[in-house]
Amino acid sequence: MSDQIQPVLSIPELHDFLAREFPQVTGEFEVTEVAPSRLKVRLVPADKHLRPGGTVSGPTLFSLADCAVYLAIIAHVGEEALAVTTNASIDFMRKPVADRDLVADVRLLKLGRGLAVGDVGITSAESDALVARATLTYSRPRG
Amino acid sequence: MSDQIQPVLSIPELHDFLAREFPQVTGEFEVTEVAPSRLKVRLVPADKHLRPGGTVSGPTLFSLADCAVYLAIIAHVGEEALAVTTNASIDFMRKPVADRDLVADVRLLKLGRGLAVGDVGITSAESDALVARATLTYSRPRG
Amino acid sequence: MSDQIQPVLSIPELHDFLAREFPQVTGEFEVTEVAPSRLKVRLVPADKHLRPGGTVSGPTLFSLADCAVYLAIIAHVGEEALAVTTNASIDFMRKPVADRDLVADVRLLKLGRGLAVGDVGITSAESDALVARATLTYSRPRG
Amino acid sequence: MSDQIQPVLSIPELHDFLAREFPQVTGEFEVTEVAPSRLKVRLVPADKHLRPGGTVSGPTLFSLADCAVYLAIIAHVGEEALAVTTNASIDFMRKPVADRDLVADVRLLKLGRGLAVGDVGITSAESDALVARATLTYSRPRG
View 1: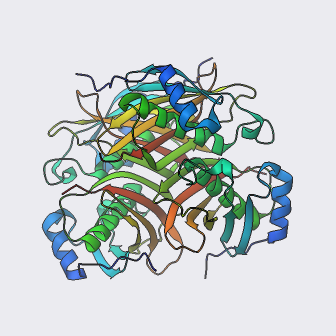
View 2: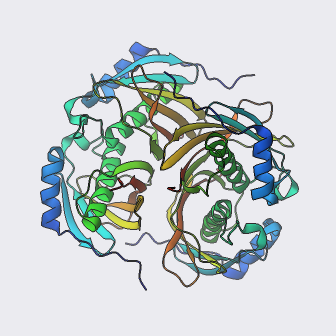
View 3: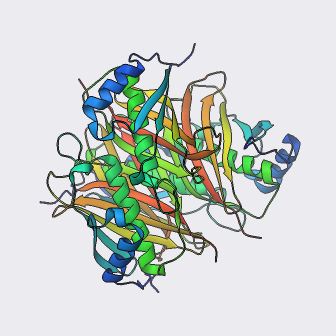
């Protein structure tokens, strides 16, 4: 009756995957929740992510959105040969709260054999106001 | 604490507005719910909306998304000199269920003095599976 | 050396295709040019496309962009089982000139076995100023 | 007759601006051409931009697109209080050629008092095949 998809990887398994495949972002991204068709990632902003004024840059928000949807797909299909981003649209709504972590909340909208689509809302930790939202499409390799 | 915005127009007022400003779509779009930062519109597909196979065309889904977000803005700011769409991104996820109405569920993400942004999910009536999603940005005229 | 793709259908063949598959838009869309990786379509706005003030509506511009890219794909791969739009982004830059035809100029950016991507600029006839631009992705059925 | 906008800053002035405002990317981005409504930027990929397999990551391509359009705006309006990205859509078409610089070619589509829109195509140096394309909208502060 529901379209929810059950995850197949746990948070520790996802962290192992990240450390192995994306060592350059280890310690930046932390998966905090995995649920049917959902996943949450937290980013602790470092100096390199900041713009003058202490706010996080657009490319950092894009990077968080891209990584979060990618992890959501992996969490629900298992590790698979590289899915690649084919398209992304992102809207920037308001500045992040200074000195706060960023939280990306992903909802998988489609997990087809060819394409996967995820929607992601980004907020400052402990805030409901959206900093940015994005939708990303990934092309999945055919076995 | 919350970022929810209270609506200022009722459903009958929105239907009056539609009939007056968009007589060509009267009878096609029906506002079914207005709530803080939210609005729902129902489209009863007519012959002209259909593609071979009885499914609703992409442009019809775009038109529904565009109109629904526009109505959501009007519902929350009142009738105002023409806001214009500046940008839209839309993802088509799956075919609508044949012979069912379509429901557009709008969430206003931003209602600034210059720009308004709305997110909309479209489903077939009585189904949870997203047919399409879109985000639209409107530029509001400066008084 | 070049990435240009040669078209396989002529303008009359495309008009036959349109008349057969999309009888509801016959007489509205006219293909005026087919070239390697390119195609141009002209729309003669009818009353139903107009907004108050005599300008063409956003959904009409979307419909023109969607149809133009679809025709560009068909022109370069031949008639094939239904390719479906998976994603579109569209930017509206300025109002069309009143009482002028609209011209959609498509460039195919990718024509892969799985996905096709087209970019389209829309101008008022005899003007260089972009009214709108869009990028659309189509998923091609696997044989 | 033309909608082309004349640039007001030279390449050395743009490099000064970059070094002053974005010291963290100095040496990565090089403006190679400024022309009416146009600007080209070259990125020399460093280790931190690479994905396994030696290809450049999606976020790096986004960062290049975002920076290139921003520089194009500054080149045509002069240094101004921070314009902010409000929306971006990006399509990834094919992998960059390994060990080649990336070239971003920007065309300004609109430079209004409120919003500026730029279109950008990204290729590997000495190649015509698009690696990615993007359209970005910036909101310009009101004086």
